[in-house]
Length: 391
Image 1 (tube, rainbow, N blue to C red):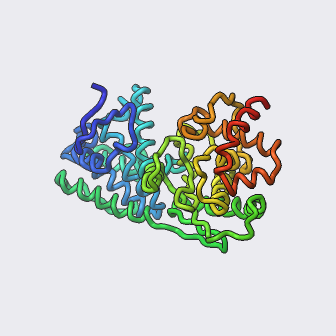
Image 2: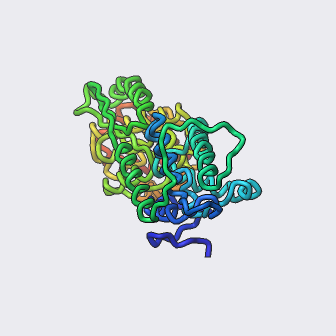
Image 3: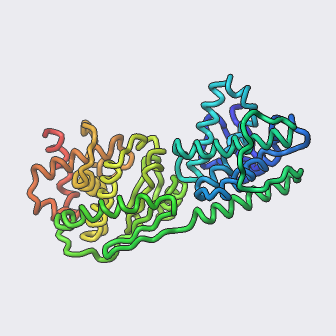
């Protein structure tokens, strides 16, 4: 058996963590019952209480909500892997790999992305400072380092498991509530909604839209947009996947952006990179992704129904956004392209090649007619497909 059964009844594989199975209730409960120092302390003191101390210290030092929450979660992997003393852990390289991978998934789920190197340093500093006092008060052991100056008064009073679990969850709820705070940035043409931690992307996304709007609206013969574009930046995959399902669509691992509700919905760059399909996405590619979605906004304004010609919408979006797709052989049939597009291997690369052929060989008037009347493609798709295969 490769899994453990958690407090909430989930079957969880620590070596192959599934993010949707990570549960803060399991973390709070297990850490409240896990003794600090592998039990070698004067009296019981839980890992959960240590994490609470670290989080409150980070908050008192004026760190960001993200860093405070990271401090609360920094030992969350021990919920699933137990607490291994540092000297032993240093001799277990494979254990450290599994632990780091698991903790990264916890951070991505609750923070939206893994920690940066600088954030790792800040969390480690607080953990080490707190360790000094843990050793002093729980083992009467004073290390050679100077006593760290702390911003909080913390107590080693023995608390019940239930008290620690409740305080852990209350602190998480308070921090998580702040995580849900939404920022709204509005211009004449669009408004961007995001969490506090995604604010740095606002300028980049708005700049990308402003730079490309006029050209793309001209291609679609649009004088103005029907309404302000709503842009929502999702900080993590779980929240984005929930949005996709709420729109009545099936979520796929490669999805990172959409216009299902008539606005642009997109993951943060870091969250995109947490998807295996987009692990190497850079800022230039992220900008092209935003343009890709704006192309769909324009398409929908000309004709909101693609009449089953999803491949054509993606053909235009990939090419007009300047996205780069790997060369691919077109071996699908008209029926597969029209009715099973999402199931095709390399579907976007196929669309890109078809769109490239159309933009290079067909009159603009004909392409624009397809935009206005996608049903016209039902008759012409076979001919376009065969011509692109030969090109």
